Length: 150
Image (cartoon, rainbow, N blue to C red; front, side, top):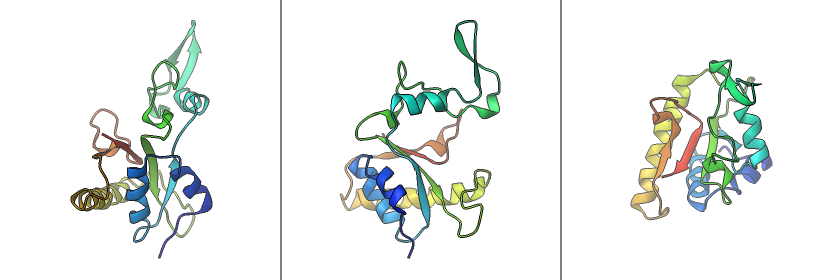
């Protein structure tokens, strides 16, 4: 049976209790790793800068393929910036290197469907109160690792 590493557990513990409940259930049958739980404004801003350069007094997108967020953590907050975090980023974990495969969209989608099933089951049994949405369902900016409280 898969288990979370100490690092993954520490990140998950920064998240809303409903997110913790879902992924503590998921890990029982599907190996995965927690990429991000709660993020400081500074950590969020570092992600915001990806794909951007500071030009003429503002941050401009120069490499759209490298953009990972439109939220800077200061003026525009991510659900990761709350305490507890209202969002978590989770990826399937492979037993052989590379352990995280950012380009395996088919597996990320399969993982997402399984997590959605767990969410439905836990809501039905009232083990979680909130609905949880998947960033992989966003049309304009699919974010397959991302899950957040609706």
